[in-house]
Figure 1: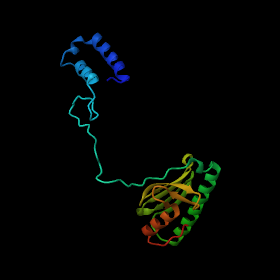
Figure 2 (figure 1 turned 90 degrees about the horizontal axis):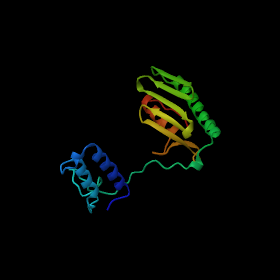
Figure 3 (figure 1 turned 30 degrees about the vertical axis):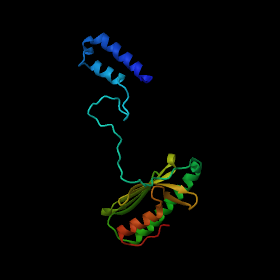
Figure 4 (figure 1 turned 180 degrees about the vertical axis):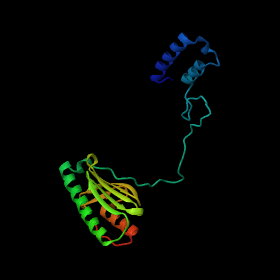
Length: 191
């Protein structure tokens, strides 16, 4: 049985073939294979009944149930208004900057530097790596680039009043504390 699209394709292809290359209608021609493909009865396995050397049988990629927890869905009603987002994100980043500057005064690491400009906070730890924290206003998120854990996107959680990475449940300040403390081997208090 032909679908609604197949007669249109058949007509377009056949009119092109008849005008351009009547010799293609031979049994070994392209048009013959195309017509055979369109007019073939459906195969119960789901293929078109024509074999092109491609296995179209269903595949299983897991031997058991898959239990992968992805990021939780963002409820659009819970998105921050832009002004509220800027207030929360700016307070977080400025507090983070102050605490990191105090921390930098207490430790001695070659290449330790903190820079803030254009809403981007950069913490350089010399050979240990560089952290970048910045606001993403359209998403209402704070993004973190870490030399330890890689990129993360933190959303404001109204219940805990913290920036949380929805994929892992990690808290922005606690994550930074543990990573910086393990890299610099000096305790740090950011939260």
